[in-house]
Structures are given as C-alpha cells and as structure tokens.
Length: 448
Image 1 (cartoon, rainbow, N blue to C red):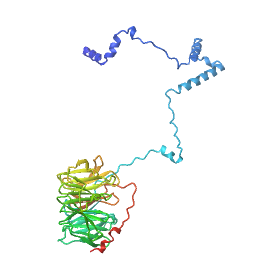
Image 2: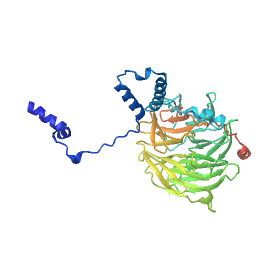
Image 3: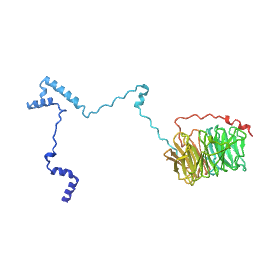
Image 4: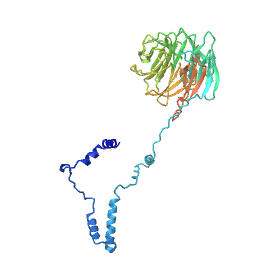
C-alpha cells in the first residue's frame, strides 16, 4: 500500500520532485537586478537611523519633525492610492445637440417577439363548400368584405360588423361556382362558373352587370385582376385577358398549358403574370412581349414542380420574387427570380401545398396544406425556418385570403368551415387603405 501511494505521488507531481532532487548549477542561476524606482530612499534611511537610536516614535518629539512626517505621509498616500484604486465612472459626454442628450443615456428599445396565436379567432360554417383542389372559391376585397362561394351561391361576409349577405345564385346548369375574385375597387366582383361563363356583379346594388362568354369551352377555375383587365383561366388550358370596359372583351390569349389552369396571379406592377396548371407547369408571361396575332409567347416555362401548381404568391418587398407551391406528389415551395427564370430555393414541406400568402409587414410566408396534417405553416424568409404551425381544420386547407390591412388570414377547408387567424400580427404603423377608384369599371353597366 505504501509503495503504491508513493508511486501515485511521484506520477502526479513529477516536475516538482525533479526540481527538489537536482542541485542547481551555476549556469542555471540568473542575475537579479533590483528595481528601487518605487522606493523612497530618503524616508527609509531616516527611519533606519531613528530606529538605531531606540525611539519607538521618533518623529513625535519635534514639531518640525512632525510636519516633515505629515508631508511624507501625504506624499506616500498620494502614490499608494493610485495602486489598484477604484475610480468613479467617466462622466457622460454631453451632446453638442441638446435634443440628442437623452439618447446617449437611454438604451435602445428591444422589439418584443410577436406572439402568434395557435388557435383561430373565429370559426364559421361553410356548408356545400366544394372540396376541389383546382378551384378558387375565397377572396377578401379592399372593402374589407370576404366573398366565398358555397355550391351555387356567393355569400359576402362584412368584417366590419360580421354581417352576411347573399350576393347571387346560379342555376344547376350554370353552377356550381368555380372561382371568385374582387376587382381592385372593392365594389365589383367576378364570378367564374362551371358552365365556362364569367359574370360581373356590383356588390353595392347586388346587380349583375354583364356576362363574359365565348372565351372558354369548360369551367373557369381561376381569376386575376390587373386594373380593368380580368384574366381568366379555364379547364381547357387557355388564359384570356378580358377588358371589361369594351364589348369585344377578349384582348389577349395565353396558350401554353396542356391541362387546367388552376393558379393565376398578376405582379404588383401589372407587368408579369404567373400561371400554374395541372400539367405541373409554371409559366411567367410578360405583357411587353405581346405578339400581333393576339397569342402571347411565355417569358419563362418552368418545369421543376412534379405536381399541379396552384399556390402562387408574389413577394410584396421584392417585385421579381415569386413563390409557388406544388400538389400532393410534389409538396415543395419554390422561389423564383422571374426576370431570369432561376429557381432560388426549394423547400419540401412534407404535404400538399394548397395556397400561399406573404406577410405584408414582415419577411414571412404562410402556406396552407392538405394531407396529412391539414395545417397552416408560417415560415421565416429567407431561412425558411418554421415559426408556427396552426391546426384546427380536419380536412385539407384549400383556400386562403388576406385582410386588407394584412393582419388576418381567412382559411376555408374541405371540412366546410371558414376560420380566421391573427397570424400576421399588427403592423407598427397602420397605413391608410387606398381609395377606391370605380372609373375603370364605369362602362360595364352600359354593356349587355
């Protein structure tokens, strides 16, 4: 036991034991050079001389010596207080501008993290909502009125007072209704039907203004406004620009899809149109390259998706950035530079992408999904980190619409419910709503 203890001690401190056992040689010694710059040699010599006389307090006998002692003490204390002494905080530098003086003393406020409610604020029944991935049955107008198509009827829900009115109903030969879209003025609304016709209605007077016929041979499942131009996409794969102010309303045709056009979105500038189809193709069309034969060639033909492309959303803070979502066998959200046609990023969401909405106040993207969770997912852009997942629907969330202030999102699902989510929060500075301008539609009522 003793031998083991000695061995352990030897291995733990090997350097120390080696130094004690070896006698230092002359070569190992360094010359010591004293530094007396910090010593008061006069006072030290005086104290040594007085100590030799056997006096315990030699300076207390003479007033002159007492004065000399005090002077020496003051000098020594002045020097010693500078060693490891705590100093007061440096004075605050006064600003040259008095109005900025307070900003130097106050810390910058930290923006609190936004709380995202995990449940819907309100749930409404939506009976007879058609469970069809290729249709677009929900839209929120600039007048803060939500339009939803249920079977053969379009209902208007006023968000200001939560009142519901019936706008119109079509017969079984015309219905069901397959798409709805508010005009920019917040008064007129376009309604696409299963019979291939498109009706224009005045929501203030609940009056049909005109019916657009002859453009499509089958149902019209997608609509998009560009000022006075109403763009329609049909099951026949054809996209038509209709000028609603003139009798011969068809002004352009875009032909490039081989199957149903299920997604249409104009950019904020009104220059580029994105169209998605059941043929898994995403097209970018540019009005500046329109040809003389009324059929326009696409600017970009993008074939990266492997399922139907219905979900489309133009970025509000970057004009040439487009987000698109694929169907059940694709499940991806892709981001595109529409000037070059380059795919900037692709994210596999794990489920069918039904709709996309950008946050107007923050760099965030909201997606709605089908199987298997039927959830809404909030993403941080461009990292695409999940910020929240909102659940409550029991069937795929086919349709989404955003309130005019950009804060509230309405979602409609195959479970025949309409839910409202405060997912985008409240903007820091409320922007006034743009004034409606009904002038581009003034001629609609004169056309039959």
